[in-house]
Image 1 (tube, one colour):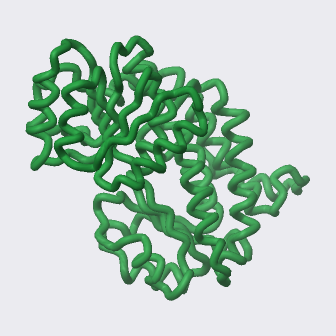
Image 2 (image 1 turned 45 degrees about the vertical axis):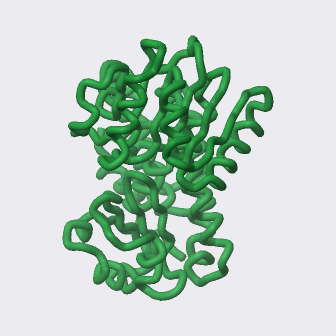
Length: 330
């Protein structure tokens, strides 16, 4: 497959109602590689006809958010490098993309064969851009920010609410004498605890019963709480009451499920840090990061142009090919 045939459509996850499986089926079995994260959904396919069929199933607001050829490759490279994330430069997204590709390519299809070589090039380029442009950026992940907020001086257990992708990314970064894991699905909490203890064998990680009373009891005894679930009006009042009833004072709540607009139920809760405050922390250090991120984005654009000229990003090209770089901004 030539790079010119590559097609990408992307949109905010919250603005779309179809499941990834339904979207993947929009053009027929295995005719779209769908990457779903907490922030966006990306659909990758090949050829204008497949793109047109996908667009028929997309809401109007999503139709303009697409790219083809080298532009599509540049987007995927920025996406894999974390440059399209709200937490610019974050590292978890690359693992999510690799896992998504592993699941998609495990079922043989024409599209997986068409995309295969380009995806491998994408992974190679992602590693190179991160190594050459982003290695000195500092830890850019939700987990690193949570660790920075909580510190290492916790005098009691830390409660982690949730066991999805975000919780899996955050849990290994939480430095505490005892990590309490609660999730509505007990088996997922068990799996998360297993992953944490595989990485830190000496860390105490206790899985709580999946009932609401078990969660609230943990709120009452925890020194810190990290939530990796959306705000829940039906349960948050009880959570806040349990937090206020603790025998100890101080401590932090890091709520990664609160949108930037916040939530009225959580207003004034002592020790609370939501996504908005987390992003404010990052903006305070943004000048140096901004220049470095700009260089990384330019590097992604240059690599996409080189890929469009041939599969090797290092092969020699003629003077006539230099015109292809004229569209890359400073």
